[in-house]
Length: 241
Image (cartoon, rainbow, N blue to C red; front, side, top):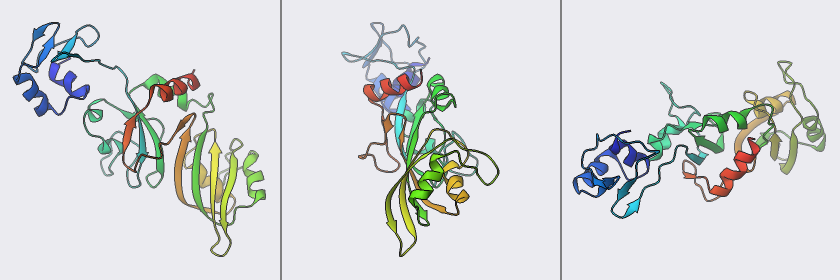
């Protein structure tokens, strides 16, 4: 790996900022001061220092994103902005991808990583990793609706769902609006929207709050992201076992 790419990846700034750092002779590799950004090193073996600080290189990165509306859960798109367009260095250099997807108009928790193995395990149908959403519904959600969701309901195309836990938070009968919390253990296309459509209702707003043990940080504004804590990552890895 090139030294300038290594330094940018571990968060020491943009390529231009890294060049300035190298020109100041602040960077050493295995005890030798290096000023050439093209210098090749092995991140697994080489000891890189900036001043007296030893840098730690990670192979895998994990971020919690509070996804806003208007961006798609993809790495690239010829037309739409993607969740990766929200990132700045160093995260934008880490070859991240979203774990699963949220619709363009859905907000909330989205995990970004470059760890394909963990992503595969968390999305595996065999794992039944729970996902919890809060939604505003056009229609009156009743205890009977909750019972229907708790059984294996049939969508309009004949596809069956696994039981889902539906909780009524508020009901505005005058305006025929409900706010609910729903937990599902599978990831069918537009699943929550299709489940409500099957009972004659429409999802107006949808926000994901939780995936497995990982809960959306209430301090994160829409469009913001942060690295997972060691505790959050350890719990996720346990769920992926």
